[in-house]
Length: 560
Image (cartoon, rainbow, N blue to C red; front, side):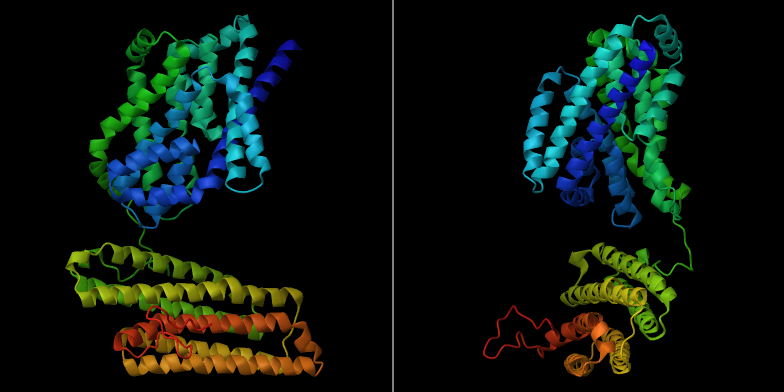
């Protein structure tokens, strides 16, 4: 009974440690997650800066897995090169050791203070104070859990059964590595496993060389989760970073195992305190791996690119077709490629508008799901176009080239924004109508379908204008914007007239009808801003303001 109770206590203390780590991670991510992601994105310009920022971000998050997933998203989207991304992971692995170093000292006495500070911040009820309060409470719980682990293990360190089990493990370093890797994979935290190892070593439950082997296993296990979590992707290129990090860690662990005897004696000789020795081994191992691998990152990245080539799926509508990397040294050709790719956004958006028409006219639920997937295609193509243009050498671009690059970016951005309005707003309203079983009045239905047909015509005009840059066509599209506004106003007036006449069918769908009219006008505004406004600005035909007697130089009609 005493042994069972001790096991339950031990399991509870480990669970408290894991929960504390989880609270710190979620608290920091909620408080600074977006800013950390932005900092990480800006740091990927070179590998030296990437290493340092990866170390700092991971020290705050206490999770190299979270850092790895953020960077993997950048790499999969083609926004950054693989070399600085690998440097981030080297820095992230060093960053996980910093919190272990801090907790290796006897700081359990400050746990109540941390929890009190966290409670006060949490009770303020506003972010980011509330989220930082969560992080402070998590740190306090981690310290309490470590103190409790020491108290639980101490009475049983001389128990024959425990000595027998731990003695068997201690004689097999490979078993230690596998065990710690499995625990780290299950816990999603190498920090928690290393801290647990330090507690066991502090009480003499495991000898130092076994503790060092467990640390090696924790470093291996922390690289497994990003690989498994990214395994669902179909593109092998998206797995280059997590798999490269895992192979890197596996090779380092094998070398560490081969030299474990010598390293263990050296660490014990340098640091008699076994708790500090485990923490120092964890830090020195990751620093040594970073120093050895850093010069080899370009070669390693090329090897990973050959082993995991990007999947070229011709049937994937979100795959760029015309963004030829070899043309980036010739700006005029590269801009033509980007413009040609941007025209594909017109085709995708037209398919989305036709899907909206079918959903409103025929109640086709299938088209709603298809339109959602087409919005993802818009997002991917727009991201690829921006990434492609950002790689062009600005010094090699003439003023006309820079203006054309800005026009392409403006066009692509507005096409994506228009797609977002269709997907999130208009298709959401269509879905709501079908779910509630509502039917528009015959007149209201005709008005809505007529406006969608006008949008499709205007979209085609915008695509043609984007390629020709003709000022006459630009004035035509801008004038059509005003005509569309009048038709929207007429449809709204007619709707209110039907409401005044007591039409039940109009009353039931009034909110949906008016929201659809408003969002259709927003889509048309994006079409004018995408193609007409840049041409009219260049020709000097665009007024800075519609207000009588007020034409500031930096104001432009927004259309709404």
